[in-house]
Length: 307
Image (cartoon, rainbow, N blue to C red; front, top):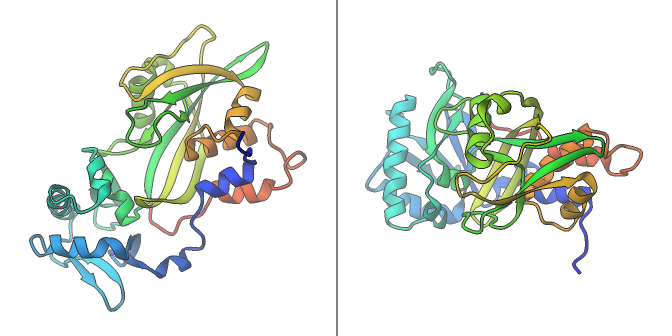
């Protein structure tokens, strides 16, 4: 049997990127409107430069290691269209492995002062890792309260998922894209992933956020997740609707803890569970010696603009 993880190890595994000043080595800064919005790995620069020979909307500056839009691309619409052309060309050339996971979902990049919603441009989700942009999502804890205390609905991700197949997840979760709002995204994910009717989903309460800066073989991912708790009727049973979930199971908190420490949860979903356990008094300064270090890791400040 593999060694069990403790809460700090789980948090640090997700928030695995150290001080952002250490990222300068081996990275190009992505600058828009004189604001840092991401980091690109040096390994991704040659393929990007090759695409820019055909679509020169971005300027790669090797001397100071940064990437910017050409000054003629000053609006959200023009930047979004230009980046779409570049990425579709690169997808066709199989330039970056991440683009094989194309989602047809646009993620916002903030920092604009000349756009009413503050969005500088939108980017295909699959490329967000390569550009190291800050992404946003929603995670919903589906819970049942009864005489046995609090229990939690846990989803098992479908084996066909592009990322973390077969691992455990919240009852519903997803990225915020295509110009949708936070609450709107939460209701959508509840319906699509767990067949939770809108009139029930609307009762979910936003409890705050978790933030972390993680890294995988695809690239960097600084991320903000809006967290919701949704108390479900005792007789309600979720079922998979969109093919992203294989099954659901209603677990006691002890059962959740077993899976958490056995590394059965997708990394950021594990962090969401830890946040839930802290807020509901299951993890406290009295029973967890690394309490403050865990807090620091799941509420990481990020040096990128947001809404």
